[in-house]
Length: 425
Image (cartoon, rainbow, N blue to C red):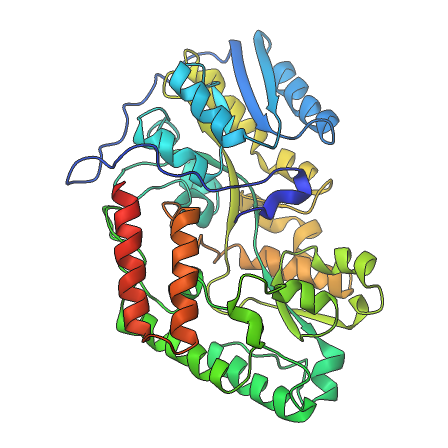
């Protein structure tokens, strides 16, 4: 989900694990803070780069919370976008972590390893009833019991198809591919009809693509990676065959490749994946293309991008901290936020909100409805333990396999061995 939240001036860079994992069995959940009692007193809330664009919104949410609970005082801290992960780790090391902190799952993991976050599943019995499953699962971590954050705002990807190119070259944009095999088949038709001038496939596989094929990426105890399976090798073999057949751009395996979203926006490839507001953005970048784009549901399990609020295990005011985290992530406050920026709420009650579930008939609105409906099945496709260094090595090995320089099994074995080595370090 790296850089996914740029629209909120919030960036999500991966955090390397700060310390090793724990015992042989899953770590027992951290003891619960005393969450009972009156909601009053001081409580601190830290957000990530919401000022100044969303100052009025957040201040309104805080003011309403203080009005609802007379005697409570919220100290709002907002940190700049750059260096946020380092700031949080510094606060954790110095014992100054706020009571409630905006943490995407990859930022929360190092704090969970250090026993600094509250298992909210122990203090909040309604958690599973009120928040979507994928959002809660994002705050469960391999090797640790419990849930270490309230899911806040969500997003996912949908497919976007260039209907003009598909129609021109023998495809029906009303019947886009729904599986990888169908994608390859339609890519072959597009190549043949266009004389190789236009591509349908234009992205290389990532770990998430293996997950979509049912490949288990990591052991349950979080101590090793497990994605070097025959099923994973079979998928890379399919990509290798498609690449050899010329169904993907020749430079797709290089670091200089422009990316399928950029090429799609330029009208040179016919498929990309992107967030729910892609057509709206495209209307500015390429207004001629935007009306010709057809959205559809993502192939396989939709990806989940999630931001959340975690509660410090050391909070001296657990009742207020938990109430504040719930308040900020309530259906009403999330819906109000979603009217300001392209995000989706993490609460089940939001499913009945027509703002998210009803289309006005435009393709941009259709994309939003598709994305919102997809969240019920969306999951994080890649373990948060995967670092930038791991991702880079995996990309290199996948590229070697797809180009035919090594076998898919050799690439996967090497990738798993390197990732395990980096995980232990």
